[in-house]
Length: 467
Image (cartoon, rainbow, N blue to C red):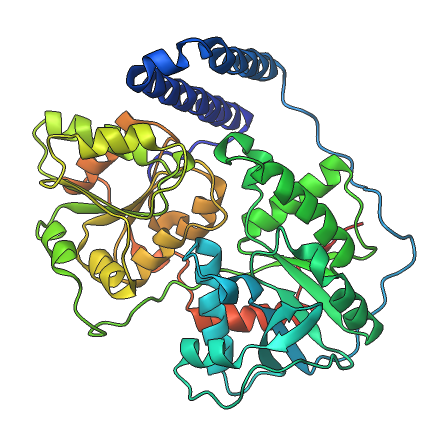
């Protein structure tokens, strides 16, 4: 459904549009700085402009070149010796170190929270799930955290764990900056014929460096290199990410453990059940119109909030009666779009932004929206597409591979970073000319996700083994 292009020409066009979008974002942020702080930045304006010009020249030079040939099929490995098969699993340790220390309510931590709840809700798993955290170089149980997340009565205080034969350690939480601290634990797990599996949420910091902030690309790459050497398996949150991971490792020639396996699962789509509570008055008011479109996600350039705002600006100028609702915390490099949004004449009337919403608010928003929007140019999964489908609502998505994986032929698609194309798709949707089918969208539950993780980590249901 929607824009269905294929082939290298379409991929090159999308790549060019993404790079042009990144350049435009840089320029807009610089123009905003210059307008607000002209005197302060005048003397250093060249230092801002010169790097942008250098990047722009490099990008245009790169785009002028033909696409590279397929990467070689072999990569350097840490050892040519065959991988040791782990002993049968009895316990599945799930790392929750970061979320126990501080729950930032990020997308990664949403996955951690939901997977822990799902695993502890199961009664017939082949292994016993144990949420763990790192403390002073050792693994500890997380009884307090588990009690809070599952609603169970706390049965014990946190205690140090002894690693036993066959234990599996799933590095599910964000350990980018703390991975090395687990070195002794990794060694002990391996000495006891266990296995270490690390979760890869996306490769955006490597494939779309302009979408990241600060030293994230460097930190992420250092973590990935370490995970490739320390892990017996890597598990991604979509098949698209798993395939991107394999291609990246092979193209870059990154060393990894011999026999390193790669698998994938899909995130759950179920959120607060109907009747779980009452949404806030502000959320209810925002969705009092039948034609309210919902965009869920942290405000950052790659999520496409600027594309959605431009599309609805065009619709409002044409007299189309529709609402645009953003739900997501403030991210980075979005000062310009936030200024445009909050100063817009429709803000508070047909344009809304909620920087915090619980699952009850989110469920209400999905239930009462006309459709969900997913205008990102890069993602690891596409949770709003699945969550909307779970609530029976359609999704209008940018045409990127991972969204095709999740949305299939049940979602509607428009060309990436193309605001006029999104505006036209919204009009076609409202007029009944474009029809989506949420029942054909991938929409597993979190319990499905938990079972799938066990199938991979414990029963060795991997996608492939790296050479």
